[in-house]
Image (cartoon, rainbow, N blue to C red; front, side, top):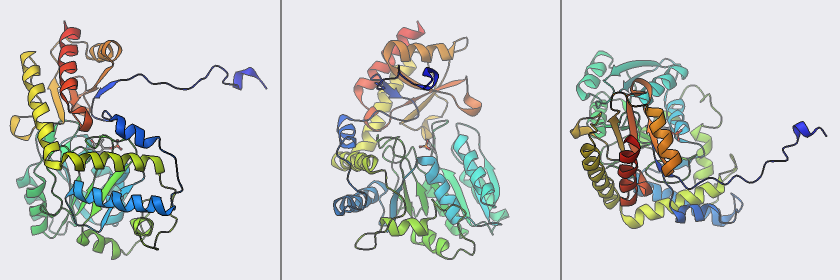
Length: 379
Ligand SMILES: *Cc1c(COP(=O)(O)O)cnc(C)c1O
């Protein structure tokens, strides 16, 4: 064999111990990493099925919902987004899409690829979605079947009023499709109380689990719409009528795809940690760590992209001072402090940094390290 094709020099990959304070993935606790390394068992093993049933209960707690359809899609948050759109939207249907950052634009793409028509409600990057504009869009398009919006826009750090938007949607008989990838576990998200219809999240943000899973919950209204579809869902893998048989217990469990067994152990463990801490305590911890970080950042002269009332505690977008070599600062933080912070995305590229305080990463040590490292590197 030619030595050219033989990867002789490659050995095990041993990553460094970083502190992850970007927009995700977030720091993972030792308990969750330990759960990941437990023995792999068959994904139709009765014990594994029992674990999946517990996982559903834990997800219902995290989402604050009684929705029967509450599962984790075996793929990252982007697949949760796609799951909601490909199942709920049929060709020709109108969807009001709120766009105040990167992820709203991705929702628009999803609608278009489903053959739907996206009615865009634009808001400035860094601002929350305007409920009034959503209402105007619905007034002008009363035949819209859904309103899609991002609860916590990770590209800017803005929090939108999910309860108010879904209320307006309901007045016009439209379903709400909600991106809760960054909000779940970090700020209040009350799926049942706010009557949200299709909500997807991600494992790697405030749940502090490994990337690659997407919790999704669908209301009865959303499930009804899927059941009344006239056209088949174009994605076989994400067709929830097929996946449901896989996640519904007691004898009904059938093979659909091989579950990411160990990743699901990790999600189970991270949700047990969330339950043990308590949702409200977790929200309060994110808020108090944000408050500490904010005081420190303002002392260093930084200002926030998002105004106070709609600022996410778990995603702090700050303006980069003029004349700073922003990529070099991030490189120095990574090399000298093993600290990752996020670059700006889209229209904030080169203008802002994004400092995440997500899940296990929302703790005192991280806040102190970040402030100290930023101060030293900037000097
Ligand atoms: C991270 C993120 C996603 C995508 O999740 P992936 O796990 O990266 O696929 C979608 N929406 C928002 C708001 C996000 O922050």
